[in-house]
Image 1 (cartoon, rainbow, N blue to C red):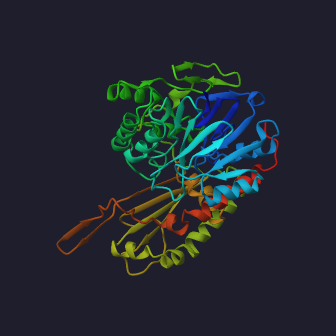
Image 2 (image 1 turned 120 degrees about the horizontal axis):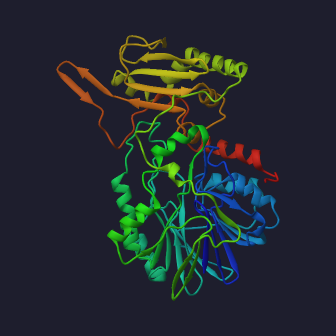
Image 3 (image 1 turned 180 degrees about the vertical axis):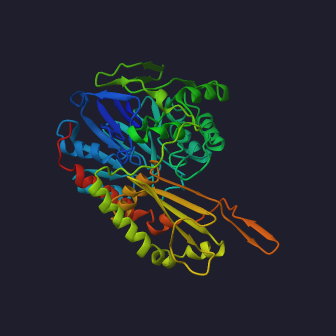
Length: 464
């Protein structure tokens, strides 16, 4: 069996005349146009071998890239005419595949083995409770060797026991290694290596005990004006993980695995060939640009709309919403009781071409009128670019973009003082509600619209 890394989580696996492609991402930009592949690659689409099986692990946009999927649906060379598409039982994901006119889609179930063109494929579950949609890893067995692509899944000792019961010791594994801190900067969350999560990756590798392991699923960075977030979002590296893995579980052989690298897996062992692919290679080794330095310079929020006439039109829509609609919408929300109970003083700052303006709302006061300008304290702050606020009002964006690109920033200090008492919000099991994320709630409907916009954007187009 041969596995080749194209980029990030996009793998090409070849065995016994069958080719399997996982989580394809061929183009920049990706994930709401915030990110680019890192390291950057040269990809010769004409040289990709015909693909018999396409596997999609889950709906995160660095794994479920609509542009690439639209290309594959439109191109007649990469996917074989009878290619099988494997997908999780995800209503939105399956709707996208239907809209792109994919055929022969098979919905997978955890640990339900599939025999397809000489390969035995077993989806593995994820215990991730953060997302409301399913995801899966994949075991690939060709009669001689077994590999596992963990992707982004969270697994338990019981899951690993089932894997071992099915296939014994795994020959090769693409292991999760990087806890992503995307959004932590914008939401004022801790900017440090999350030790519990990171140590769990080492424990999973140790419990899994493959003969050989490589770090997987972390090959992108923020682009251009969002690039400052590269110092805040990626708290470790392949090399550091492998150093720690060697100390934690020295019997597991391992190596870095970059785009264009090929791993040949046989019962006799594993051979890694650096840059051996004939269809993908590293264009520029720019991994140093994601070096974790959470004390680096932070640029101010700026609206992305640079045309003054267009900006002025957007600004008026935003101001009208804040001054004439926002309070009514907040009062209708169940969360208003929390703001009143905790006497929250809320400040909203909107950034435009000519600086910013501030509005405040004191939920501990006698009325709930919006006040232009500052008041004496801030318990919740939300700062947002005019362009992003306008897009939220017009239902043209999602928090997947607004919440991770630094165009929205927030913090909170929730406490209340009563006679002789001081109480501080310390709950870790529940987030304290924030006005904009309550007025424009994330969820299935926002996600669906986001993906359908991308389908409309890319469907049927010939993409170079």
